Image 1 (cartoon, rainbow, N blue to C red):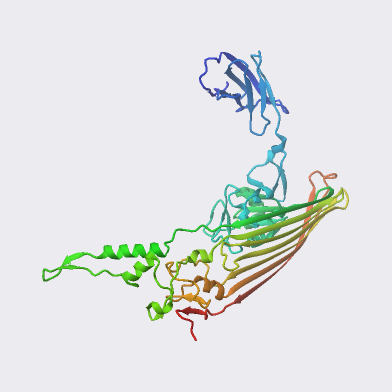
Image 2: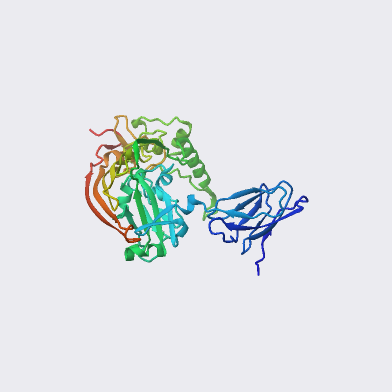
Length: 496
């Protein structure tokens, strides 16, 4: 018994020919059910049944397109034929692709379980970051990368596979060339050195035991290939543009206050039956002073205006513009690779200077990366791989003032006439916090030396092979914190 064949088509009065046929796999000659057959250039189509048979009505001079997952799409010009049998061949570009899984590799054609693989170069393309963790954001279904900040070096990234799958929010196990590393180590390496990421979920990660309860991320770095030395350079320059949000300037601020204070006045009848008008309150300034702000005639000399026990200066100054601005991020990567049939090598150097949109002072991270991978074939049975890497990161940020930008209305200057940081109500000058509040400098250096020996005895015992990994890692961290009191912030006149 044959299953009913679903069909779909668009109405066409010229569809007066019926084509039948059978679709088989070219390699095994087995029927292919579920193959989609479309009349090229139309929406007319059908699907092959369980035995690979199909029937379709077509117009004259039609071309049929046969497509099936995992097979090469084929087009056939019908001509005068009424019966067309088709053989589809495997798509070797996808089914023969090697996927890293567990302690070995596997072809996609025979792969079971939930495994996703992405290329390192595709992941980092156009991302505007040198972080291998941030580059993964949005690249793999089920892999969630979150961040708590956009500032370089202090992004506060977190990785989870299929979300928080337990009350303990277990993070995935990360292996770099077979060696376990932390999420921080993954962030520190040069993303341009990564060949592939493989994400193992659910049962696919079970081979790694309890450490893989949150899934596994397998990271492989780029290796050298046979051939002449190849030198590759990649450079990026990125402009960090802050997005300013609308804030009232001095005139707009004064006009809004004048309107609000006037509207606050109401007419009422007191206890004696007399009509009264509520007093209009302008709070910090008088109505005349607000009017002078509005029309730009408010004096700026300190002796001409006195409030809150201090002389005051006035200026239509944007605190946001004073703190934030266009900054430049630079990234440079240089690699050399090559080798012969017995030995291959790849050496890379990376430098990145990534800044936040804070332009008044430096706020960012500088990274230096070095890596060398060497492969050597001892004989037909033994192969060795060695790697050495050095990652250095310096995160340099202000101790205070981060997140400031609009502490007061834009009616006061940030400097007094003597060039000192000026403050009106106390503690509201963001430039003073950023410049005089001190700095925190975190330096982290990671040195790694690793190796792998692979012995393949498949020639004598089919499938017999084993590998031995060795890895040494040294991490040095140093934190310097400086603090200076903001003793040159002045209220009003310069103090003698």
